[in-house]
Amino acid sequence: MNTATPAIQTLALRDPWALVPPVGNLDAYISAVNRIPLLTAEEEGDFARRLREQGDLEAAGRLVLSHLRLVVSVSRQYLGYGLPHGDLIQEGNIGLMKAVKRFDPTQGVRLVSYAMHWIKAEIHEYILRNWRLVKVATTKAQRKLFFNLRSMKQGLKGHAENGDTHRGTLSAAEIDVVARELNVKPSEVVEMETRLAGGDVALEPQTDDGEESFAPIAYLADETQEPTRVLEARGRDALSSDGVSHALDQLDARSRRIVEERWLKVNDDGSGGMTLHQLAAEYGVSAERIRQIEAAALKKMRKALQPA
Image (cartoon, rainbow, N blue to C red):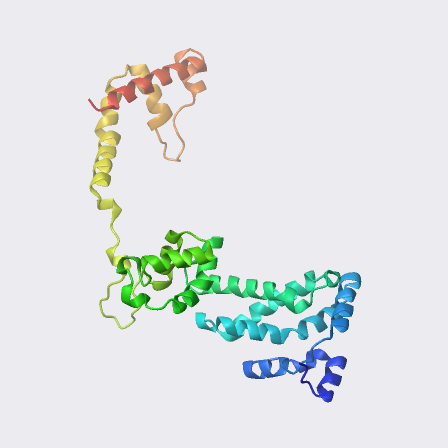
């Protein structure tokens, strides 16, 4: 029902944007958008055709303005998630604008019905991004559970008396009911129930009073002191010192020098030792021959480094 006064209707026709406060007060904004006149089916169709056929932005503005009250109404359904009402309205307005851009008046559907999906989708995405630091729902089934589980729990009577504490606040029978109603797996209901019951916990201490405090980061294991890591580190240290020296002792003088020049020598300027061609010139053989000697020497060293 259109409750706008004649003066407001005249202002809306001349400059509809003037009805929306430019700043600050959410109550004033809601009051203003509720006074914006609704469009008749003929006006809506005319504006939609002008937008699609001519790209008329003024027509798009008229369509958006006349449905801002719808966004306010839908956003109220999501106040229980603890997010600011103004932010919910803002995200819903984005969904409304997307709906206006895609609306086809030739399909015989009013914009109010078509826009409902886009408004809710944008609000849902905002809630999922901001409800927790860690996103609680990513799959389609998880999203369905997130937005329906709490309301369904309120309709299930007596779950607190016969609930299965191992599974949270829902009993096994109630979990099956929810899973059947939403067409998801019972295990997914249990997982979402656990996620909703939990909360974000900071790893670092949050106190600033200088007193000693304990946070989860204090309980994390130091992997460097894990027994297998310690043994591995000791083994690496042994191989990189005594092990390499022992392996080099297994080589003849030429092979040892080639390996040392190619792999172990580092000059003061950061450069390595001699190249294959330099060694080949020194020993009077081809670079390929030096490469073969190097490969054979490394193979012999690997065998010497293997545990007995």
